[in-house]
Length: 134
Image 1 (spheres, rainbow, N blue to C red):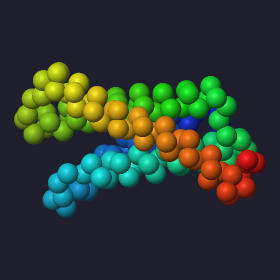
Image 2: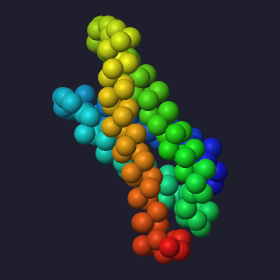
Image 3: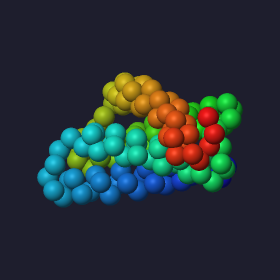
Image 4: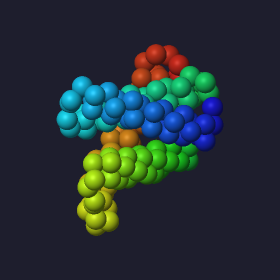
């Protein structure tokens, strides 16, 4: 598995799951689905990293890890921006560019820390499952 295919897998799955879960929560009348967003993000981080380890029988090289973390952060920020503006505009609400930038900076920082942590911690799981050697 290449880093490019990992990022494509993450992007397509992330968008699909966010839309499906968002529609489901809205249909059920449940507000404030940020907890679902976080769960989706964590689950997908482990899934793509574990898939990479299983298919390649190794963990990321230093450069691959950097590319993976940066790529997922960029995907996350773009998806968050698109879904936020889409959700607000569908409700007839406008958001200023400054407000969107602030919100994305805050969420982006939290997600960046989370992304780095879970990409890094997937190595321990791969070792525990004897997929790679320690």
